[in-house]
Length: 109
Image 1 (cartoon, one colour):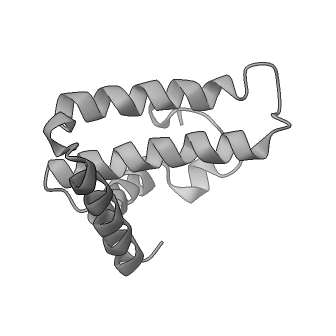
Image 2 (tube, one colour):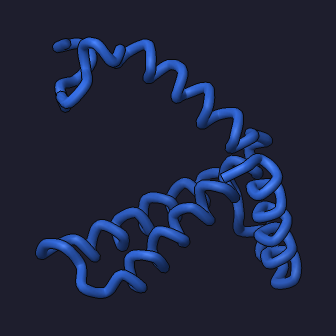
């Protein structure tokens, strides 16, 4: 997702919350709790194997992403920048030559 699309999406999320006066409930703590709650609901879709209802997975994933974006916004973090920064850190921990095709943790490579 391009940085422009993320900014546009954040604008939509801000407007949605503003229209309902929900920003008052969007403390970092509440948003972090919501990320965890919605991630649990996403995981529930896979509880007994591959889900047959891909719409349910899509809705739960959208909830997780929504709360992650709102949390980043509330903390003044740029989602695009923080993901790229973390990707660079992870690249150094998992060099292709050592990690390709393996799920071994970086300190065990």
